[in-house]
Image 1 (cartoon, rainbow, N blue to C red):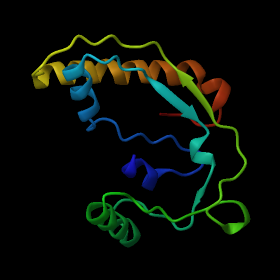
Image 2: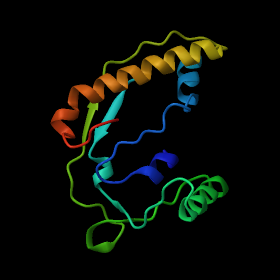
Image 3: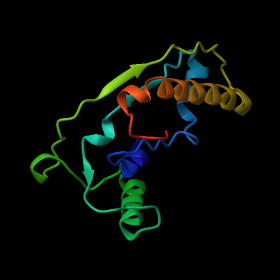
Length: 140
């Protein structure tokens, strides 16, 4: 998402998922299964032009732009110094669907329980394939 794009840099896999509950609520309301998917190598496609840790002036400007425009604007470079992705392998792995019973008005307890299961399954998926597709990246 927009927040993750600001944290994306080679050698990392920083996910912004703990506060993302909307997709879980929607799955409960519609009865749609959730399918954990992880793409290895996405963060290797570009490099951040300047460091932008949380609290830096650049990050504050990017956060302001995200709030004002509705999308983030990471400053990245790729091949030939342009925003053209480097040629890197990206491998997406797909987990087993998590069956979701439809609940017309889900309670926060239902949302949090399903969200926790989704995050657990995503971590299992990552741990199952990280040694093969991201051996130098230690954590999710």
